[in-house]
Image (tube, rainbow, N blue to C red; front, top):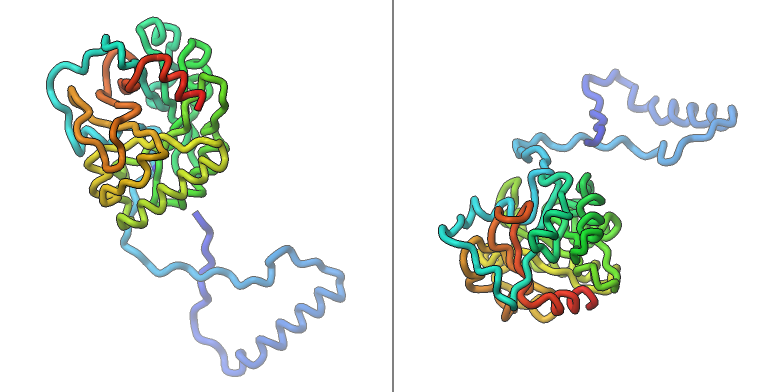
Length: 298
């Protein structure tokens, strides 16, 4: 993944003596209002904001319904031809992730085809909510899947704290019911411009830390972090400080998950393809189904 009224400053010449009369006229107007019992609205005395300086910067139109986990990955990192990883390995549990792009999902069929978990996009930035979230999130639960919610990050729009609060307030919660995965942060290539959103590597680390800590404080769980190794290396300086606390959801469209970002010795989830048996993207949990349940329980 993706406004304000402005008051122009008056222009034109000022008549001689007008500057001296303005304070007097303003005082007379105020006195008249008080005598008449008028009540000024809040902030009525504040000066009108100045119009911003002209700029040539252009931000592409906001298109959150086209932004989802992995929506930028293939364009930047491609896909490796060949067969997907073996799904019959007992140590791997199959699942999927979906967003508004998939619309209403047939969860009964998806479960019958073997899916055991799902991540569902809930929010983006601090203004967007997935219009299909209830059908996807509750529907997957009703079909017997363990499900979780994820947030598509826009670090150049607002703070990590603000976006984490928006996320938790609009579906990104957690409860120890054995059927809810940790909330997830989708942090990947910017779909609106520069890959790293114009942030320095240290600023990006700080943004992710603020998001993570806010989700922890609000839900009791550190969020899963969805990313790619290449993006993480370039945009965080391959920072290794989240591996001890945050599960990793790695994206790599290949037959192996490949080299992982610094700090993680293994991935918890792997998005290995953006198409396949299930609706949306194809994922594997790195463990058997009982370990997936253990993760959900915390």
